[in-house]
Image (cartoon, rainbow, N blue to C red; front, top):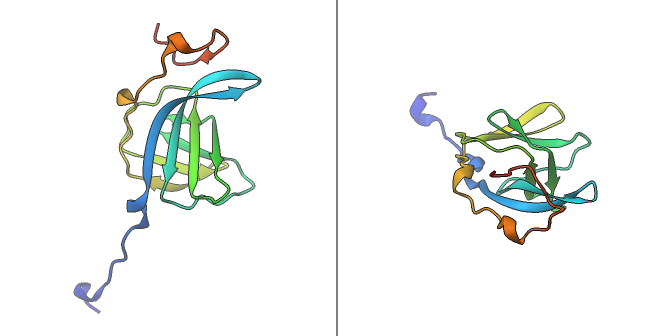
Length: 126
């Protein structure tokens, strides 16, 4: 066999998309402002071990996988820094690396003036 005879299958990671958004999520009976990373275009099977996403040195606080396993919502309670990609895993093991640029600087932030005083703002701009 020669190199010209080798076939290359398309990388299914090309179909993966990621969207960052600041959201409110109730934790411990209080609304919290968190950064949500919605990942689509991949299958995220439910497993016994907890899923996680890593961006640089920041690890998600929690990850929710949709019942159809086609969407994973990772929630971060620490600021995400710019990175050339992110990783998804379960327990303490990274399963997949995705080469999708992450830059939280350009996302639209929620209007703090419209939020209740009981909202826990972990990204306070003050």
